[in-house]
Amino acid sequence: MNGFVYTPPQTGLSILFADDQIVLADKPSGLLSVPGRGEDRTDCLINRLRAEYPDILLVHRLDLDTSGVMIFARTKSAQGFLGQQFEKRLTKKIYLARLWGELAEDTGRVDLPLIVDWPNRPRQHVDLETGKPSITDWRVLKRSASETRVKLTPLTGRSHQLRVHMMELGHPILGDPLYANGEAAAHPRLMLHADSLKIRHPETEVTMTFAAPCPF
Image (cartoon, rainbow, N blue to C red; front, side, top):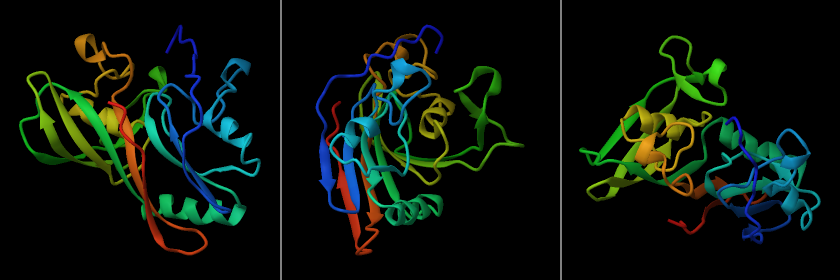
């Protein structure tokens, strides 16, 4: 990440749903979820939302380069209720990705524990002894001669989990600035999108699913 210059996209807010308890937005690739270090990294999704929803509270994050569905709370109780769902893995998250190369199998599971790679942070890496349990299910949606489109279902929520797991399969996500090289890295953005999120509403406790259109 040395030499990285933060140039967030100047697109308008895309609100997927809002009521007095929650707000769901479609985060564009290249925009931070929350402020980074330094005054040049204050522009982020939560700050943009705060202009319209001053009571907005963070529940989870998406990587800078990942696009798609993010949920925010508007009350402390909603934040706690949603946070528990994420912590206890009661949410269901579906991602879409374009991978380098052609995956041979149609479905599979990656079960490899992850931990931060301290000398190279923010990179993560597999560590079978000290890594935290990390599981990803994948299913092929479409193949071409040079890439594979997949649906990814993370069963845990580790940092960079999908990106590292796909790299470990030998098929990094296209456009990944941290885990792809050569032709695989030569894309205008990370080809990873948080397609849908299923949660229980913090007030009604009704199960709801929210989706954001995939831009690639």
